[in-house]
Every structure is written in C-alpha cells, then in structure tokens.
Image (cartoon, rainbow, N blue to C red; front, side, top):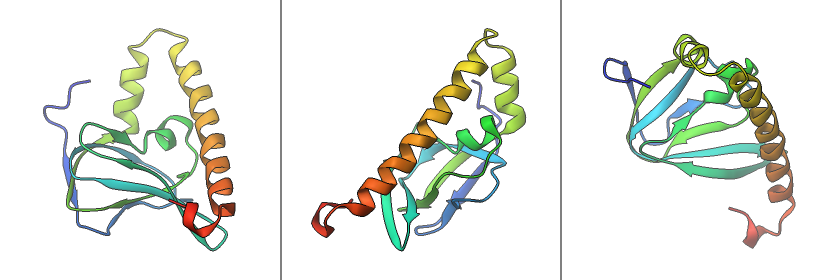
Length: 130
C-alpha cells in the first residue's frame, strides 16, 4: 500500500473525523495523534476503542458501502492520510480473488460485534463503563 503522494487532513481536538450513521467516502491512516471510536446506545455514549499512529479507521464503510457504524473523534491534533474507495478497490483488485469475500464477511461480523459491545456497555453499572 503506497502512501507517498496521498493527501492528508488535519483534525483538531474534539473534532469528528466522521459520525455514526453518515455515509462514508473516506478512510484514514492516522499519521499522528489519537482518536476515540464511540457510539450512542440510547442516551449513553459508549467508547469502543482508541486508535493512533499507523492504524486505519473508517475502512468498513468503504468496503461494504453502508453507513458509519460509530463516531470517531480526535482526542488531540490528528493528521491522517486520506484513503478513498477507489484506492481500496484498486488494492483489493490486486489481491487474490477470494480476499474481498473474506473481508466483507469479517466486516459484517465486526459491525455485529460493535453493536453488541455498545449494547452491553450501556447496560453496565456506571463505574464499569469505558
């Protein structure tokens, strides 16, 4: 995955990289900074994960063409390389034939797991939530 000439975007602390339920057109390779991945479960915010340098976020919406499964917010200044659907499609086209099918199934399972984590975390006693 060559990223030498890929455009970048900078996000300030508290700024959303993307929002749950919105259509996704980009993924991001985090070059610097930290983000929190979270979702709303009823009226409760449930933190799912923290991601940082070298990690890719937002790729699920590019592969399975569904809406964002969570919101991602910068904890501090974040610089990220932009990955488009065209980039991802080109990488998958160069991969062995069954890889796309495997990836789609993995993302479907991950979306289900994220929903379950959100649901169970929202039910936890106040001192036990992330």
